[in-house]
Length: 148
Image (cartoon, rainbow, N blue to C red):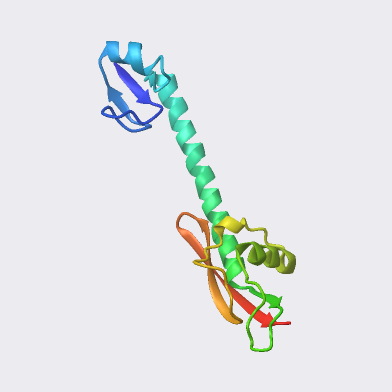
């Protein structure tokens, strides 16, 4: 019997594959547990339509992420911090502060979890901060921290 796998099944195949399995395995295990659907013309057509819409959605997300990356790379965010007599900053700048500054200065809303910082920034100066917008798209933000 031919089935379309709806989920990854260990030892059988990956999601989206059309495979031949024994009737008993399909009717007693795969189909009742909603791991597979019988591969008829209508289910194959539905599966193809679903794959195409998912691919179009992914393409739209990639395009939007690329446009946002281009917008971010053109900007330079400026954050002012209080500094002591010896030039040492009071506190530090983290991804939460960077996201807030990007939002207030340029109106670009970024989830703070997408801003990649190894550690909090504790020095004044210019930095280049990577922002992971999509799995393969990373924008570089110019960040300038100045004394108040």
